[in-house]
Length: 297
Image (cartoon, rainbow, N blue to C red; front, side, top):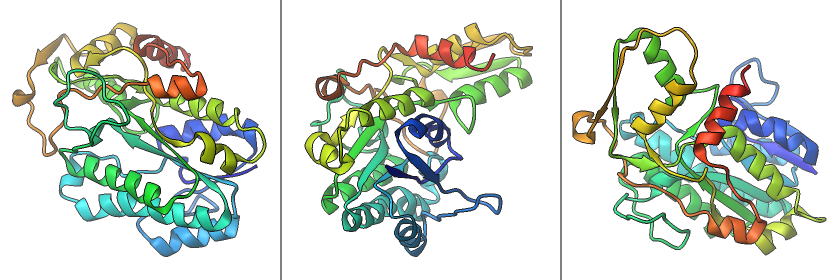
């Protein structure tokens, strides 16, 4: 199987490059002069030309505009990458008879629920990032190419830009760190997302497109359990053994930490459909965090 991976620079893309190797030949694209094959997701012609050159059996698209606050002032760029590009990828996949795997976010929901969101719950994104990611989901679904859309949440890893790395950096610089304690979600390790993707694909017997026609669609994929950003930060510092200046970690309400983008106060995703279809049980977020720290030793 020829697999085209649209990004290896992000935290999920880097992990996918490792986990997908056992399933076929992984052809990755990147940005910058150092990468032999480049694709600009903000440029439709760039997307089409790369896919037509590679002619993959499967396109895996972890590439995204993920700067949630910055997206409020760069709505056009966020929509180009998150909203429009996935539809173009799906159009090219359909022409080739290829499948597409795409990643989305818990931020498609407004956070007004008090029970974990299912795939059939109505999205109502509250920020530009969430709106752009929902547009990408809808674009793929509208094209009708064989697809798997995996919504995840609070993604972190030991590379890229994420909450875990931000906390470790701030702990070296500040005596006090104040973290929001009234937004609830499930921190999800980037490697777990990549490994789950590979486990799903390993169940395809024969043609991957046929498999996605049969069992594809929209799924929720996150670590199990729940916490707040403060609870996540507290757990990070329990595992971090490095030198730090931080003396105090303080829990605060969201109104004391105003950001350009509004975040949902509750964004837990129900993973039952994923288990029913693929028999995948996701580990508790605390266990994954421990594994992430141990993987760096």
